[in-house]
Image 1: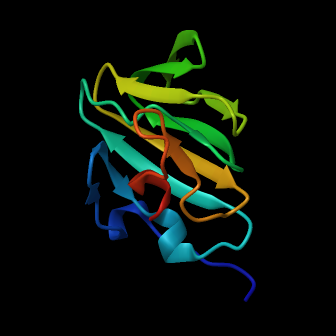
Image 2: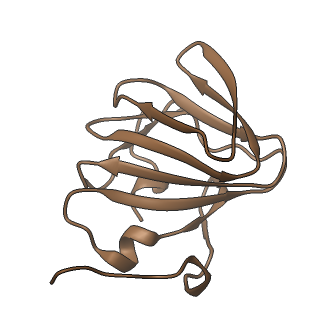
Length: 128
């Protein structure tokens, strides 16, 4: 196989238990072997679970909107066209200040890699 293509408009937006933003599972559709891409859609005021990864380094690309991003003890604003890389062991959380969409690409492509701060177990966020 040389390449795969999918339009975000063709992917259903999914609700994940205990996670506020909705997910468009780009990776599930494309099945890449080395990375796990997903688009998260936040309503204003929504947050994802504060979590870290076991193995995955994550690239966050803000597609549109405005969010507060917390990485470890630092909080900063991210907006469209901002790119952020977070190492696996760093705790992170996004909170939307307005409706927002964020492309998140984790690598390597491992299942159930996220650890939720509240219960320190894998979250649904990375199991899709």
